[in-house]
Length: 122
Image (cartoon, rainbow, N blue to C red; front, side, top):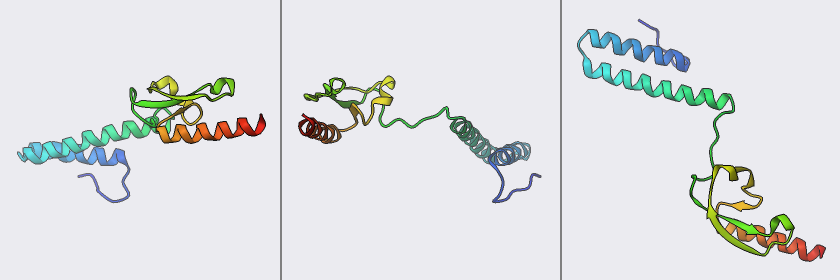
C-alpha cells in the first residue's frame, strides 16, 4: 500500500490513485476502481499543464480567438482619429492595451488620453 498524506506531491497522488484503481479492480470493486482511475487521469492532465506553465509555454489569453476587440485608428501615426472593431487573433497579443483593447470603454479611455496628449503637445 502506498502511504497517503497531505504533503504528497502530484506524482505521488497520481501513483496512489492508480494503485488504488488497480487493487480495487482486483477486489472486484469496479466502480471505485473507475473513479480512482478517472481522478488519476485528471491529475495527470493537471500535471501536464503545470509543467507547461513552469516552462513558460502556457499563457492565459485576455479573450478568445475570434472575439470582438477594439482598436484605435491612427495610433502608429500618433494621430488617433477613430475607434473601430475587429476580431482578436493570436498575433494581436502584444497589441493589447496599446493599440488593441478588449472593451470599447477601454479603447475610448485610451483614445481620450491620446487626444489629450496630442492637443497638449500640439
